[in-house]
Length: 295
Image (tube, rainbow, N blue to C red):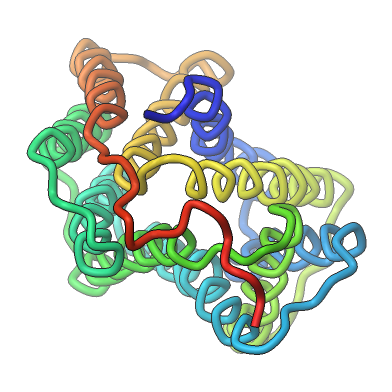
């Protein structure tokens, strides 16, 4: 079983991600999400590379490219497409299917058995997010729904493959590789979607610095650390804390209303996260407990 300290440190990542909504709306209003994604990933990756001072070798170039695309380039692009085309509650609910996807991908890619408790926790978390955010009058756009589901699948695959591929390098180096790769692949997307780049104010730059250094470099260091130490399904269940943190921060900082239904959703989410930590299995023998050497 994972240590409580590992769970708490990993949980900090989605909790901090929950603050991204306030930072984006209050400090980066009207900016292109693709530009924000690029400026969030690439500076953080390059900064960490200055400390890492090590490049991938051999087959790790391809693996890092795949992880960078899944965890950052593809995931963030699809996430923002869904956010633009769907109400926030619907987009969040689609993203909340990720823990279920992780359970089944871990079965196929890691050989881990599907635990009923893990499935129940994932379904409970999805229900809790629905109580927290969903509105019956929300409009449903087919392209937005497809983007939300594909984005959840992209992150789920990134979580499982990050667990499967553990290089024999410091975690900071592995994080730097993925952030940099993700940022590089976002360059053509941002150029295509934002032909005329805006002039950024001091407030904009401060918001980007927070998203890049705190919401990017720090949180993904903690997230990848958790993936390396905790069962993938248990890590993924912690992602339910992100919409919960967003709602609570909006209530505390912006004076937004918190309804009884949302409080019930918050309680269900907390229960699902707790159950999710007990839904994992010890590492099967086919998975190395020590990182594989670089080749």
